[in-house]
Image (cartoon, rainbow, N blue to C red; front, side, top):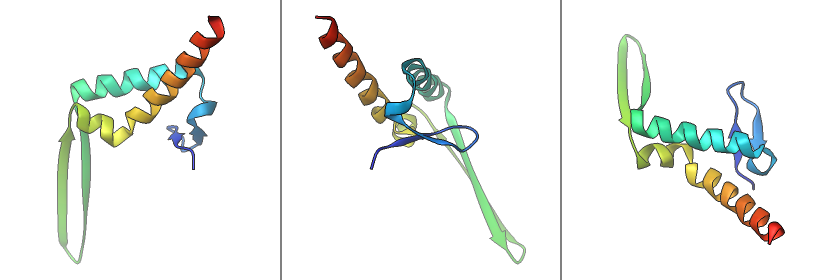
Length: 87
């Protein structure tokens, strides 16, 4: 099954269907987030017993969380195809 990118509004798009500029913008965004850090907050509870947790991801942890390697692989595939077509 093909990996899909989920947009802010919840739509899912196969990576092969993303425009190349959109793909590059996503990768750049992941790089920016990896440098700044990404906060994951979770919490819950019942019957008056509540809990909260916060995790901050940086660097490779961010890339793993967002599966950045899939986006990069799609870009490399397109780049190689274009390079082959132009030679």
